[in-house]
Amino acid sequence: MKKRLFICLFFSILFTISYGQNNKFDSIRNSMQQQFNQFANSKNREYADFRDKVNAAYAERMKVSWKTFQLRAAEPTPVRPEPPKPVVKSDNEVAPTKPVPIGKVVKPVETESPQPFQPIARPDKEESPQYSFQFHHTPCNVHLQKTQRFILADASESSAAEAWKRMSANGFDVVADDCFRYKEQLSLNDWGYIELTKTLACDFMGKGTNEAVLMQIYLLAQSGYKVRIARRDEQLVALIPFSNLLYNYSCLLLDGEWYYLMDDEKNGGSYSVFTEKFKGEKTPSLSIQAEPQFAENSSSPRTFASRRYPNASASVSTNKNLIEFYNSYPVTGQWDEYAKASLSRKIKRNLYPNLKQQISGKTEREAANILLNFVQTAFDYQTDQEQFGYERPLFGDELFYYPYSDCEDRSILFSILVHDLLHLDVVMLLYPGHLATAVRFTENVSGYYFMVNSEKYVICDPTYIGAPVGDCMPQFVSTPAEIVIIYE
Image 1 (tube, rainbow, N blue to C red):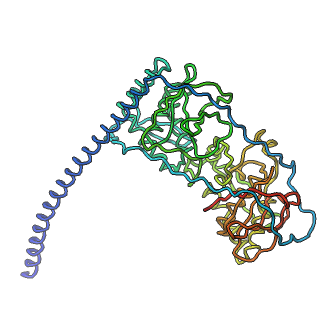
Image 2 (cartoon, rainbow, N blue to C red):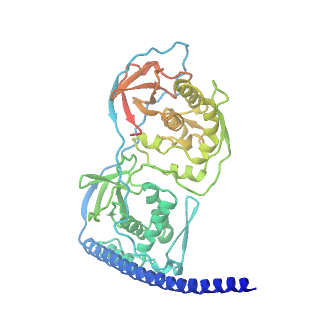
Image 3 (cartoon, rainbow, N blue to C red):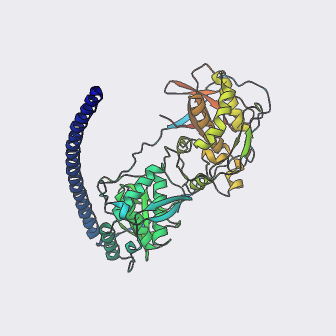
């Protein structure tokens, strides 16, 4: 009995001490939290004041007459004189181990992703109303309300300046922060973010309106992107530069950099442009470093199989929302960007396990031959002109969605497979009217080859049907190819 009483007394004392210590700890923690909140609120006020001053000064300069520039007509996508049918190897001759001539070597364009020019002061957003919209059928919510809509009296400098001040003072910085968080959440690249802000602005302000254009430009400027306001007649438009060459977009030259007109104008003409810069603004890129995370909308599965290695096969479906995003993508002449976009996780889950099984235990040449024949024979061939009526490369996922593909599309896919499954360096070979690939093997592999930086690359042509690793289409054996570096 005494023992029990002692134990109870002991734990009672321990609890009392502990309780007192906890109260003291809670008091200290609450005090520290209060100090932190005061510090954070102070910094938020500083950031808000800073942004207000920057945007106010920007708006004041916007009132001055804008400069006139001549728009350059859009450069059309080059029409490649591709053969109407892929070349089929008609003999069993083994390609000689022989060097082939090469032209210039093109390296990837270095890019730096834009960031907000200052942290955005975030109020207690839980109390703010939500505005919902869809981006490639993916639900998004931002902190907007109907009272934040505005109407421009006209497309003049003064009207644009007043609207800019209103957005700065009326919570649009928080909307920019919402959008930038969706950029991270959906793994959007720069083009995806530009599309996201345009979709929101058109949904909120009205598609094709000057208010929507100005709202998008504001969101992009607050997010650290180079963007300019332009006007033709009474229509405002956005001008955006890119680190890549864009086909089919009109452009004009500002401070030595080409800015592309983000509308359907193709024929040139003169535009009034507000050329003021934001400090620290960055040029966007078309490079896709991660798969965009759109809501799932699966296509019907299709079966793809190699003719020579029929066990190298897979049933594959695509995410139609991702295909829709790729379909909106500008065409660029930088082929490495399509390969670096890789394949979606959805396709990799369906395709890679079987291909890995088929190449397991094989030499590099044997494994590359399996992948090469899969790309050569699992897809039906048509030129872009035949399938779409215009030139456009396909991203890797698109080969598994559209019924046909051509030489550039197959070279893109083969490059992805070699990089992911064989972990070997691969480059693209740009011939007149044709695209092929070459692989830097770590083993001694025979066939047509060339040297770059003392490294040997062996030709692999995904459109020379039935041709093994090391073989080259006869008409290109003596033709110097431009070497497009993909991975560095």
